[in-house]
Image (cartoon, rainbow, N blue to C red):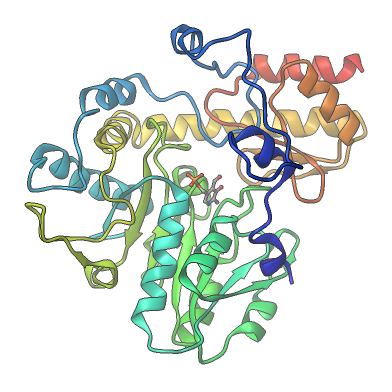
Length: 389
Ligand code: PLP
């Protein structure tokens, strides 16, 4: 099964790039790059986005950038001491509730989608007394659920998809009395597809489990699609929606929302030496920059700015899909602004050599995420480079 096979093995890339010391003499130690010093790197311009087609992060909105800088030295992990940023976090949760149509939302600004997903699994595990909890996820769920399962000691039951969406029959078959959580993805990482959320919610609740929606990437697009009503649906218990992705906040700003504050109590830990007496977050000290910039981005862009962004990004995705199809590639019809197409590995490597940051799906398709920084002229020059080969 993929679960165990994927946990606990490090890739060669991890060993050579991130490990600086090694006790294993067979592993090469990467020599320090003599040409560029750390000081030179610090003084150089940060990475620009003009050839980045693989990332789910983007250029922050100017107001978000400014707010991040202003709140850089605050710690919402200690809300009694850092009161303004704590108030801003309440504003952020309110705004995220507005974006997702969840009345009276509870939650907090996480370090990203990974933390929000781990915490959703933790809530579900802690809520139910069972020796053998399991979580049912579609195979296309983000890899953060594998981390959650590994950390929290729950069994992850992966169910195959049908046409890149969760197969509700397969989900129904996987559920049993020890299922604590069912996960639906609203904007999958690989294809940008949305699972049948209401049907999955019903299955989860019939089995006595909680239902979590991972809308880390898709959450800021969904209000402008026909899926809008799903998010006012009372049967969603918890949701991940990340301001630092389509929300155009600065990193780190993820979001965990809960239908009620009671569910968050499952996460509470006493904090005797802080002014505040308990903490529900996974991390301790956290970035106030992320919190402030999430509020600034949402104040600036909800709803008109996000609607306009969705329209532009979706137009770009459809344009790219048509251009690739005209050239004879098999293209997966985009549902949200993400295009996957059957472009050969060798061609993708050549595009990478020309500076394009492009990624591949698990099935080896080219994957282009039409984030806010991805413009039509950028895509035109990408297609021109593709034609060149
Ligand atoms: N969930 C989904 C659907 C994602 O696409 C991603 C990241 O791309 C995550 C969760 C994890 O988010 P992060 O990288 O912010 O932890």
